[in-house]
Length: 55
Image (cartoon, rainbow, N blue to C red; front, side, top):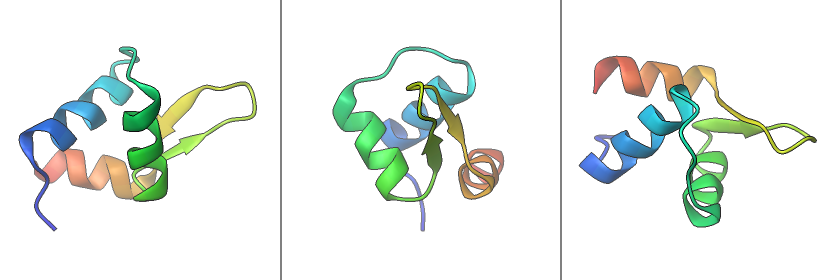
């Protein structure tokens, strides 16, 4: 799946710990590109890192 420019930006923002919106967080987690910790921290999953590396 090819990421849109906005989706790529969301993954880059997660990677650089830039704040993202709740809906962006939901998209990334539900798509399997990120994981949300109990304390609210978000980090890229292996799938998210791979997608960002190929984008």
